[in-house]
Image 1: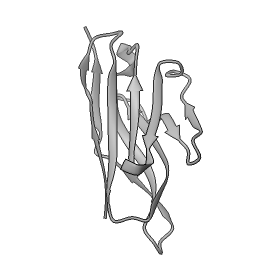
Image 2: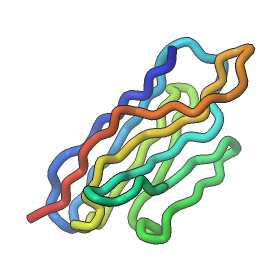
Image 3: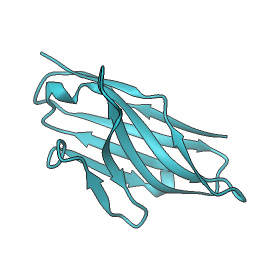
Image 4: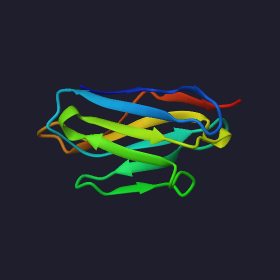
Length: 120
């Protein structure tokens, strides 16, 4: 069983910053890609940022130059540093990871979500 546990969400004023953390726990062989998604009220879930095995990253256009994704492979953890937050960043943020539990192939897992609210 694999669990992804997020933390770091909350209420912040426009222009402020938050750092989200997601840690994978359980019995698994390895983790491939990790990333963050978000879902705003009445909207579909969208990709925010992904960290690909090997170190490359990609971002949604709406968060480029404001958000930074990073990971600590030794801790099975991925971070999302969010700066210059805007009201339109308000959403539930979900962690996602491709996890291998030998001998099964890689499977996609999701965290429970953490709410980020940007409001004055």
